[in-house]
Length: 73
Image 1: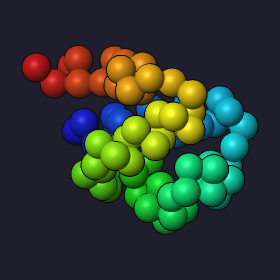
Image 2 (image 1 turned 90 degrees about the horizontal axis):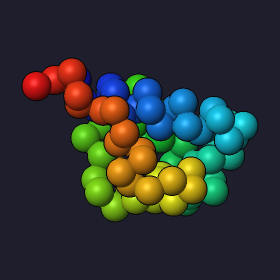
Image 3 (image 1 turned 135 degrees about the horizontal axis):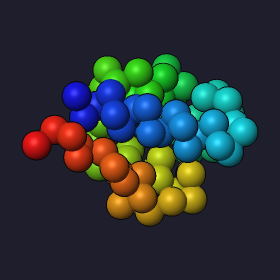
């Protein structure tokens, strides 16, 4: 499911930054529990929040989605 793939990708990229969920959520002005539910694939996240996350990770939105959904055709 694409929500789970995106959540996993966000978690991987966040872990590469060395930031905890709490510190990353503070950095991007997002509630930590909301971010946790996104990473768990439980949220149908808005494009505005996708943009916040991408900017917080210093990646483009296309980079954030790289490889996601390729096996769902």
